[in-house]
Length: 308
DNA sequence: CAAATTTGACCACT
DNA sequence: AGTGGTCAAATTTG
Image 1 (tube, rainbow, N blue to C red):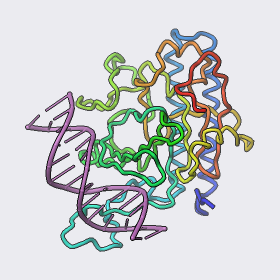
Image 2: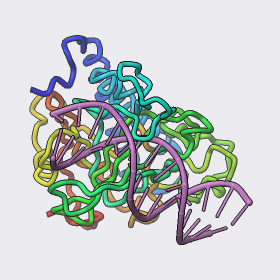
Image 3: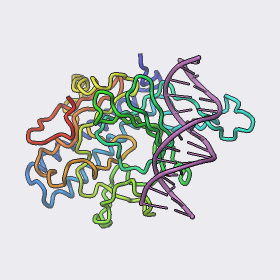
Image 4: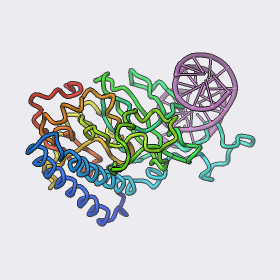
């Protein structure tokens, strides 16, 4: 049913996606062996660069996916000026003047924290039918000063109250933080230890991958229309039979650069476990593409929260 | 005091 | 009519 990629979703899109993902996997494999050789020392920089590239690949992939959904998905929230419905006289940009998204394929993430490194501003909260917890609405802090159209919705999961289901809409056009981390070597990493939500600093590079592992935690990127998010967590373990074995999934996708600072994993632990461990376990994007990154052996590592 | 959050109202969509 | 997404005034926070 879900026409994630409408007919138009040309195979070139898909091919591109596949290329990017395969590259991600290749890099992850390299990284894994690298880190297992000599955890923690001078190669860490190289490892981070690889990670940056991996993240970029995945971001690109998700972007492609987004563009094959509805154009709106990548163009961001509509502000009601799409012209087809006359606004009320006198309601300029119109309070409540918007178009409800429908049928969009937006990346949805299950994560133990709402933080993702971007500066968000909450603009609403609503009780949602059949949900125990309200849904919170965030837009990018730079909506007005930089015209950034990114928004996200955060909702605590009914079944896993410690986990948040975060749905992203639109893409960041702001320069608040790095998107795909590109390892800017001449910035002093020490100034980058502030979580991205702090943005009083005028410098756009609030923090880049600094010394933290890229998303150390399992997330599940999924199609927002799949309702059973809880079962999805287990669901997306499968589905690799389609030619994407062992894809290292991780939590940086089209929008956010994850702020791991608040997540319960120390820098130290980075060197202690197999490299791909912090790259999560599952990605499940939509009905057409389910990548599950083989569930890695977390022996000795405590995952952020036990999901089951 | 500026920026962020809260909250009720408004409106589109189903 | 019910529900969800957004706006914006009021309030809170730093």
